[in-house]
Image (cartoon, rainbow, N blue to C red; front, side):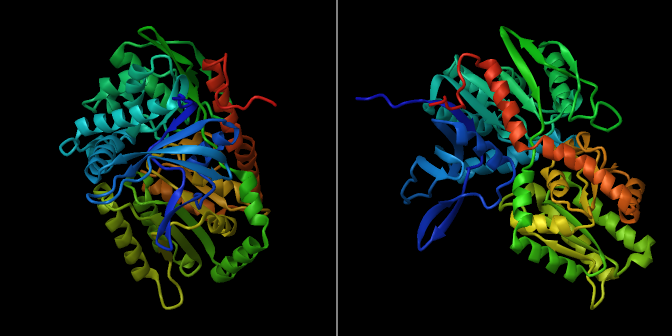
Length: 506
């Protein structure tokens, strides 16, 4: 019997790298509609991988239904690779993702300890699901493979992988913020989580602040020792921004392990955005939007229903704008894309009701037969259409109360033309430390939000062009390809004798 070849590179992420659809009664797997974002960025690693595997979860079929194929071979524009689907029951998914992840962990990560809900959390189930992810990854991985784990809901996977594959190289990347020690330590499972993360060879974050929060927590709670610190360099602002840090810790030492700390924000894909906007279809669509908006100032806001996204506060600010500046009534329009949560996400029901209530109240108070101030969409907009809205917009509002990074801000910057719009950006979005030329705002302050909207509306063309050019230089220089190259360099640093994600030359 021939041994099955094991992979040298395994990505572990809860999301599948494709979309499922039904055509003529049979299920098909389609490439993601949006070519931008974290999933396409991760799939980009497969274009240079010879034996990569992606591990994700898939809902297990109900009783009496045939099981699905655990491993599928995918061939798309990113290459050819295997996807291993971990079957989870609906009960496991609800407890692991909808409840423990979103009601207990999510509010802590985003520094909302008052919303932490310990009661319904099922940590035994969370442990079990993480162990199953680790087992699935280790079944595919060579003994010395590089296993790259993603995001907080797989916090415990490194611990189990280290037990099963002690010689594996383990990397972890946080897509979310990492809170300050006094907030993180609210979690009753803090030591278990930190012990797992300290089993990694490298732990990555978007910005220095999150890395420093992690280092401080690991040192104070687990007794880890700091390695050298280095001054913060481009693309980060070292001071003057709410999330700025002047220096960042390069590594931690814990027990017999060195844990490297990497900091680099994922980028967007400006070349792809340029390609879309250069097409005749896009030019026509931008012209249509501009005709529909007429001479009004056009605002866009893009996100999903989530109390951390600040949509409620943004809508209230837009309502106050119409109240205090009556001359702007019928002269402005807001297109608010706020994608409704998936079925079962009870943590966001209140936020969705409040958003819908606010939009209805503002439109009812200020609208008339010929003008509706806010157009709300609770469905996602295809990316090739979304960039047209970005190009046509005068103002983009990205005002989360807290956000790990926020790619919308970078997408908007990349989509601007000769007559650019203004980016209003929360100081508490990770992207703010890269984009100081945006109109930075404290979304917790009504007066600051009001002043930011006034500045965005009244800004002259010269200042708009100057700000937009500075931001575009950063977004285009440190794009998604730069991020991928940086990450590969980190992987090479922990595995200098092999390069598991790069093909050798023929």
